[in-house]
Length: 147
Image 1 (cartoon, rainbow, N blue to C red):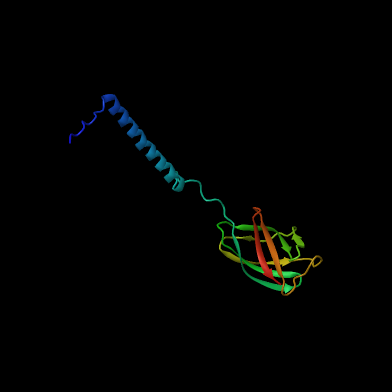
Image 2: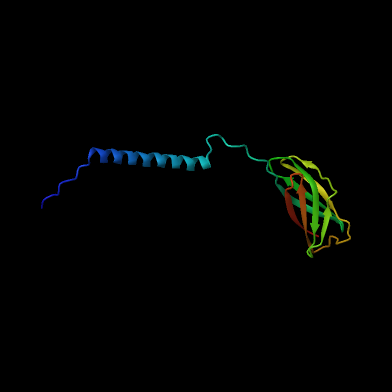
């Protein structure tokens, strides 16, 4: 069997193939850098934004209108408490909007008293209530407590 002669590229075809191959290599490198940049910024990126995070440690029902929440600030910035709301299982809400809570540094545990007027509802044994604490940055944290 005779082998068919191999086709030779003309100088123009050879140059075009080299240019095309070079463009593909460069495009692949640029795409790879863009993907890498999105996960590990070359410029260091902006610093992390302030992160508020409150977690409930414990609760204590002091009376039908007073509950103490023990909360820890596990966020990266100090938290200033601005207001709170309490909701019962029927959807009735008490708004403690005239309340100004403490300023809590990060990694600090603190206690706050949640006081309601008792007109819409009171804290009763065996029932659950949602306490929504609002910060000065308008972050809302909801804690479920048992009466």
